[in-house]
Image (cartoon, rainbow, N blue to C red):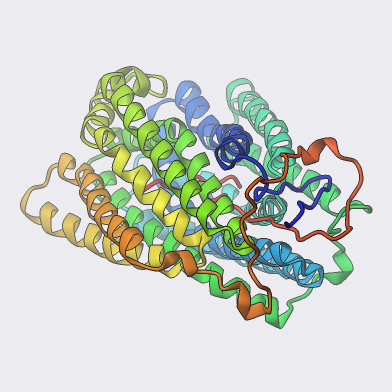
Length: 505
């Protein structure tokens, strides 16, 4: 029987009760997602309350643009997480170290590129997206300052992917709590007290994000860790870069096409005026919050599937995948009913303007009862990623959530210029993608996504009596005697999305 690796900052999910393991791992993720969403919501909520509808529309005018520009590189970080966890599961410490340093080097390059690209092209993108001229100057200010902090945004997600790949979901949570509280405090100080304007909300986000990067670096560079990040070792390892691109490119492309489709949606909504834009931004923030339990479970599915396939425990993979899909879909259905009935009250948290409330309520009434299908799509996509089949979600996103959604909007808006027809693009594409995913899950050999024998490793038999559960955070020493480590990365977009908000759609 394989033994779990016991170390500070890592967690073995191949030993113990699989359902309990998934729940215990999902809870810190849920809290982490709550505070990550707080980053995205703080600017919107505080700006809307202190500066009014125009400022709220400026912040909301192109949140999808941020996701589009950052998402490809965040998707690559996902690929790095899969590579790190795969070799961790194989006990190949040398490749784990090389993958970590290659991932960080890539993040530094990506952050520098996005800073220059975003600052220079912000006005062009905002005008292309039909941003209301009344809010365009403030929108340009906000997003230019935001993209000046692209390095911090990318590096936080890169470093967090490394820590999550080693099973550490508690330290990223602690750092996120600190930086989220700092962000809210700075937002109130800059916007509410100093009255510096909408641009200062972006500055607050960048400062807070930078603080979380510093905390991650202090931990990862500390001597005595199982894997210590050394700035002297930062370089592109050809073998690891190839694998990171192999697993990260599909996720990056998937994120980008979703972002592109949503930019099209955003530009169409912007054409209905600032009230529609403000309502869409408020809806997105609320949806992001209420959907957090579902996203936490779907990220846990990726972790559980990849880890146990690496160990050869296919029975546990099937059980964990089914459990995660059922829990995610059931929670989403309940949340959908709640938001359907309380939509007006939820929108008023951000803006009580009657027109904004009307637009936001309409979108909830159209979309919320389909949340169960959205959750099931995300859950099966997570199974595919954990099994090394990342091209499957990429294909679905390209064909359904991008091509079909854009074609639908362009065609329908040509004949029926009503904003409700745009809202319907989401439930329709969620339904189609769910059908495709369910067919793939039941008819394809996805369970053979990782073939351990390719690395000369014979998959072990699933033990009849799994090893007792171990809380690695209570252990101060590292046990390196006769172990076969089993760790898996998890995707934390978002995403996606600093803490960028990855659109659920």
